[in-house]
Length: 130
Image (tube, rainbow, N blue to C red; front, side, top):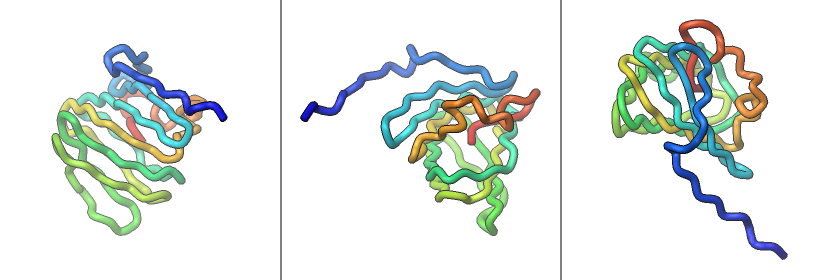
């Protein structure tokens, strides 16, 4: 039996994908988990969406206002040093209240992001992390 492959990454050296003028990201993907650094300029909007992937969002810098579409808190602001957990299939939207860097962890990895099948993030001046 072969040992699992251990990999080491430097976030600063990961390629950054520009999704639209206000949002870019870099991805690190394992077999069952994905980590995304998402860079949102003030005013960026992630349209309401949901996905089967469980999501944890950790805001490193800035602030995001979330709208939760399943009767959860509306207008929940997540700021520097705070974390939001979104269970699978919970509709949500996010708006960057200021320039923001967040780390999103997904399990399983977002196949739509890996395939580039995430048009909701790629159109025009708004869009965002999912």
